[in-house]
Length: 66
Length: 477
Image (tube, rainbow over all chains, first blue to last red; front, side, top):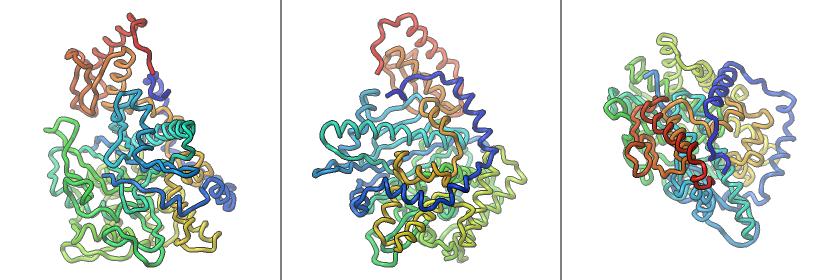
């Protein structure tokens, strides 16, 4: 589990802070070319979904949590 | 309080879907998921070097509790880091199961309900001043929490209409609700969590100086996939808490029936159905949220908004209420979970020439919450620019190992030093201990503290020992 190993924390923390300030200010433009491509995203979703939709939903049963 | 500690605890749903015959239940799947964690920390309840806690909760739900964050953007990032850690654990577990000949796929869902009417939560923690009178705070906060779902709900499909009061499926027209969780929450505040769920759990565990602070534990919220919706959820709630703590600008909107109002508002996408207040007035979800937003806007105009995120939170809040009022979600459908999902469901229904009772619709609803980035529907939308990001992926990756700038930073460094030195340690939110070594054991009551001379001394001592004695160290996993 590589992510459980130590890291050089302080340097990274500073980097993260700088980036956040930039992100908060900037509205990220959405690529209109992609947005309009409706069929494209529906096809992509179709390709990753399990074939049996009812089984996918009904098979998801948990014990209650909090 | 202007300064506040935030945390989110997420219970994930788990399913192993076998390719062939046979079954592997959620308990076994969760045990498999946690095997590397147990190897790492000799327990299925561990604190990590990023200050967070990872554990198996009631009902075998894998759970991630973010470290204490003093900053809203840190909270968003730490919440996403938890998803990424579980995504990797799920990949490992799936590989191991397939190697064993149990072919299938492991799914982790960040949602709040399964197909059998079981619910699991997304619990928010807010640190409050002990000076706030708790019963008054609850009375003023509950109507906000009841109506907040119009803005920050994760959305849920009901193929045969809203569920009955006991959670049994209804046989009505297919519908969509703002909230996943609203159908499972019953009363305003109590100490119960599983049998009769309240909006606010009154268990007072501040994990801090109890003379100064208390904890507010909100358990009515939906788990959010959208970073901007997560930000709005905590950001809006923080503002309302500040106003209640300052006793400013809020009308008493106590509801006649909390549980009923929660469900009525969740299942009313027009935002216009009214619920009754204790004083006899009738208000809709939009009425209630407009009052809170207007009050928050004038409060921040007068008192200032020390958080850099506030302007965006207020703007998104307003745009979402406008979208409901005009029934046009185009200004929020990349930023608010229920609207992002609904847009996709509407397109899917159109393509299928079907309504929300079609099995594919319920499937897309659930798949939206799959945390695997190359398969989960939310992440496919995000990759196409159809779900807006608030933090960079690089900063989420760092947050998997780097704690936020709070007491979590001390905890993280303590854990890292103890592990490097090969020492047995016991850590919780407040205590950092090396077993059987009182000199290296500490209690840190200030959750805002990023420095503590005594803890630093112990960390240095462990680091020195590590450098002097490299060869005597046990191998690190």
